[in-house]
Length: 238
Image: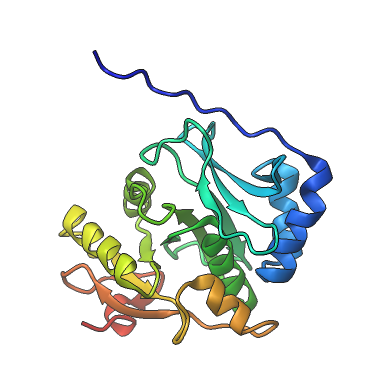
């Protein structure tokens, strides 16, 4: 007999603990307060009774099907998933439009390893004023790749940036992408800025400064194509 599947139990909100969680995200992690407040108002990010930052994961219909947790108390390194969350269902995501995008330009998707990295990458792009339409997705480290969203992006003509960490784990994830999409020419590996392990390190290393794009240094093999007015071969190195 197969084991019964645990149902997702969304952590209860604790607004009394939100100021501390908000301070952690804004002051320690450097994520813009406007971005955090917007997501908190939507209910996408909030505090639970243990002072964890809760990042809701949603499915194709926008329904919460899980949550990523991040400890915010001093000295805490806790990272985990709420009870009943399945790594193969739903992902944390954030959409951003900078300026008035060229209507002929393809959107850009960024897949990273954590919700904090997703918001950090968004903040760097916003600071740099890189006009366009963006979608940021987290796979929670070694969780399932957000294949539904990647395939949705490819169908829209999007360039998909895999912004995994600058470490062995990030290299392994990139290998999984290449195996899953061996002929997808619009998927590139984009590393965090030089010297940074992840996108939040890159954000905190450059407070208040506009940052250009990260280092695109690999891509799924294939011929170069034009996306959003730029040749992919101009931004990629074998």
